[in-house]
Length: 488
Picture 1: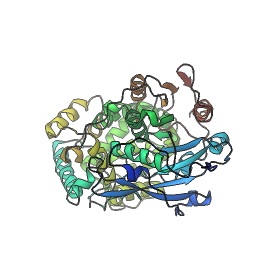
Picture 2: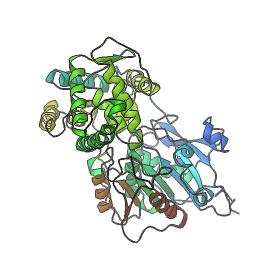
Picture 3: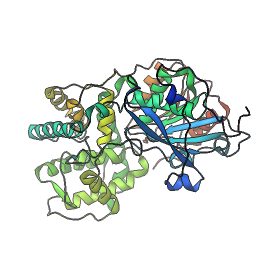
Picture 4: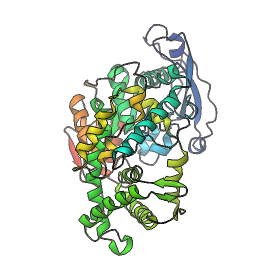
């Protein structure tokens, strides 16, 4: 039978675990996506049937939503390029939004871009809202023991409100199962191997896939990588020192603009003013748009904006606005950015993060373990120690159905990491590189940014990634790249 230009008409005849034949051999029904970028590019979507529990494939099933934008040149087509934008819990159907402006024309001509909402996310069986009182499970414990007690009780309630609905279903929303789903997607698309780009949490998913399905892995790029041995609780703890360094870096930038932002004329003054603002918010929460920004939430706002030097102005304007409202009556946001931040913290429940992270890896369940770590880090991490070490709903979650994946393999992969990344600190990429002995490391030097494959950031990084996808080669040795223009 002739093979059509856009891939095989039938799934490849793979060997696969017993009981999964109907999933691996399914035919997909394509339809419009309802995703603007994908539809505009002529893309299409399909639902892929997968077992809820791979240990019991004859029982319940669910569907995983995927999108496809076909390769630009059928004559050059070499396969599929699947991507994941991070999270855990980020929707992934719009692969064009993630990669469309950074992949080279040759890569876009050569691959079908495959987007995917991981199980439990977006169109892939996302659970109903849990009914959380706040949007995020990550926040600081605050400055005193009563704040930690409050967060402990609240975290227990947040976990219970999710697990009360269908705990057996939620426990299957794991990265290992998503990797298994990826292999079924591969087979359903008629492909022998998966090419993959993942950023942040997507690097953890990609690394897990390489460990579970090394023979099904082709060209892989892991951008802003997580050390699997530190996922989940260890990664969050590592945010503390990384965020403090990022805060000092930003303080150096904003101190040179004291006439505009009035946050301090030296880096030391800026840091002192930030720490004073946290203490002031602890004494009297700063109520904006009906949400109380206190010593629990101000560090989280800083943490969210420090991960990208291109947000320096936005962070400075946001801090200035919060500082102006401090000590006063409830007020409304002056800028759309702060309004959006407050709305998200107040209304946009991110419980899918807990469903995946807590289902992946167990954490200590004794609250005193967290409090001890908080107290021990207050001196060296005065702003972020109580955030990075705070208790989360994971402490009250059901135990994971499987142990975390230990990644130790020789699969070739390109690992790209910025030295100043506060969200996935540089050491994580180094350790993953050591554990994936067939990998190469591309270091983006002296840049505070999370996700390095960005327009107009570093042509050195972009060229290395595009070359790997288009030609299949990696640098002969680890290399160091720099930003195309000096960061402000």
